[in-house]
Amino acid sequence: MQSVGFHAITIRMSRIVLFNKPFNVLSQFTDKGSEGSERETLSTYINVPEVYPAGRLDRDSEGLMVLTDDGQLQAQISNPRFKQRKTYLAQIEGIPSEEDLAKLADGIELKDGMTRPAEVSRIEEPSFLWERNPPIRSRKTVQDCWISLTITEGRNRQVRRMTAAIGHPTLRLVRQRVGDWTLDGIKPGEFRLIETKSKPMPKHRPKRPKFLKSHSR
Image 1 (tube, rainbow, N blue to C red):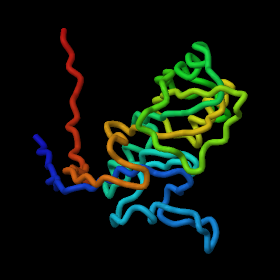
Image 2: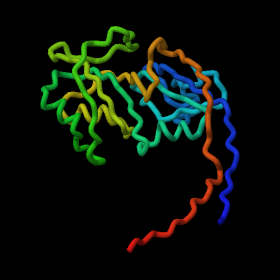
Image 3: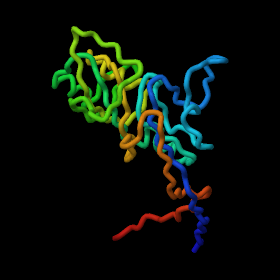
């Protein structure tokens, strides 16, 4: 019988930063767009070394970003194949019908294909939200409302494209939750640092023994 060897797994502490990104801030630490640019980046707000964004958040969106020094955790959050749940609060132009909301929930056709099923509902304007600077551009003659939308993908500007596809453009977008992490208690421009045990995968996985099929008479 061939023995199967196992390699020791070292448990270390991982750092997780929960950051409430303000409007008009780039979700990166440096601005590679143009030399001498005055656009704000993560480095304006976060002074924790060696943490990197697990996914991005558009410059014109606000809310929760998760940063970490744990490469595996970063992949689990940002890679669509892990289907990490992300909840967005969207202020949209007009009042969507139940049929419109059902389209978002069932999946809607975008230029890059059908979206996965989502959780969507009409909500009251969130009481915890801060004033945006600058304020949104809205038309006094057109009503607007808020929806909560939970998706398991991370396509480029996905929520905005989804609401536009049902005829209700997004006016303001705030990410409220990523997995089990939320914005609770974190003001715009502030962050919360969490240290947790990390258990990286072994570099060499043990080979599984081969089993022959059994035959009965």
